[in-house]
Structures are given as structure tokens and as C-alpha cells.
Amino acid sequence: MIVETFAVGMLACNCTILGDPAGGDAIVIDGGDDVDEIAARLAERGLRPRYLVHTHAHIDHIGALGPLRERIGGDALLHPADLPLYATLGAQARWLGMVPPSQIVALDGDLADDDVLRAGALALRVLHTPGHTPGSTSFALEAPGGTMLFTGDTLFAGAVGRWDLGGTSLADIVRSIRTKLLDHADDAVVVPGHGPATTIGVERRTNPYLAP
Image (cartoon, rainbow, N blue to C red; front, side, top):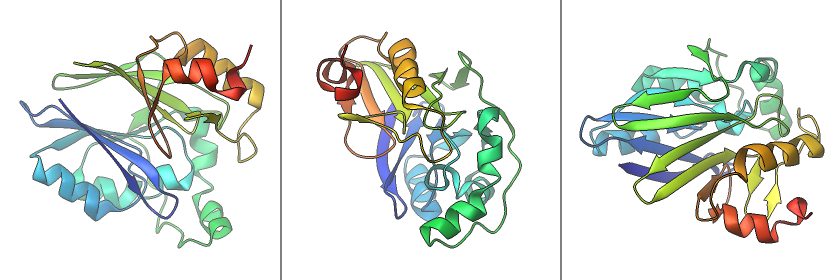
């Protein structure tokens, strides 16, 4: 199994490529920018995307969807609760001083809580974790070394995501983390939307937002 995470774009969003080297199928999580780099990394490993999935609809996580899908293929999926936010990509770009996307493209389908996305030997479970945005979604992957959680901007190392950028509330974020993420084992690796990886155990013990 191939799991490769790297930062893309001016806001250093963590993009992850999940690949089945035997069959060549792949899933790309949060391909929000740097289309050439994502395409090159897939090509180097002989991978073809089956799904392009997005943890939420902030521009750094989904802004490059149109050119990325045109370049590498795959079905683009987002939780439907974030479709209104996705429609504001132009405004998000102007607010950040970025060049607006040339177009907002249609999605190929919805992400729904507890769905399992399969690509070759990969099985990626969908976890709806609202709070940072209404449709914020995390993903759980059972890897050979244990569970990996891709949490977008819901859970960071030592922090949680903001809720004042089209989100709902801090209480919703904490509820999502407690009910959907903290039920995993302490050794589950957390790959957030920005910054370094952590583990569920470390966050359970030390994250100040999760104190009893």
C-alpha cells in the first residue's frame, strides 16, 4: 500500500495519495493545488485515481478540482452539506488574494457517513465530522501498520479547526472528534489538513480542546 502525504499550495494543505501498487488504483485526498506535482507523483508510481475526495470545501483543499480531474481523472466527491461553501470559491480566492478558479465544476457524487470507498485493495471509510464546515469529512484507512485517519481541518496536532470560516461551532467540532475519531485506538495515526501528523493517543491525552 502506498501512502504519501505532501503539502500543496500557498496554505500548505496536506494532500495524500493512497495507492494499491498491485492494481494501480488510487485515491487522492485534498488535491487542492499543485496539479503538476500530484500528477507527477501518481505517474511515477504507475497509479490511476479512482476517486478525488475532499475533506471540505475551503479553497486550499478543493480549489484545483477542475484542472486536477481533467488531468488525472477520477470521480470527485464532497459531502453535500459543503456544496454552498464550494459555490463561494471565487469569494474565498479574493479574500485570500489568490487567483480565483477558472470554473467551479460539478461533483461526480456525494460523500456520506460510513460509506466505504474501494479502489483495488484500498478501503477508505467516510466519517462525517461537521464543525469546521457543515460538510467536513474525515477518512479512516485500515493500513498494514494500523489505522490512519485523515482529518482535514477538524483535528490538528494539539489543536482543532476554526469554526468562524463557514463552520458551525466549537462544540460541534469537539463532538465530532469525540464521537467519530476518539473511538479509534491510541496508536491510530492522524494526518491533519495542515501540519505534522499525530496520534489519537497523543491528542486524547494532551489536546487542550479535548480536556474533560
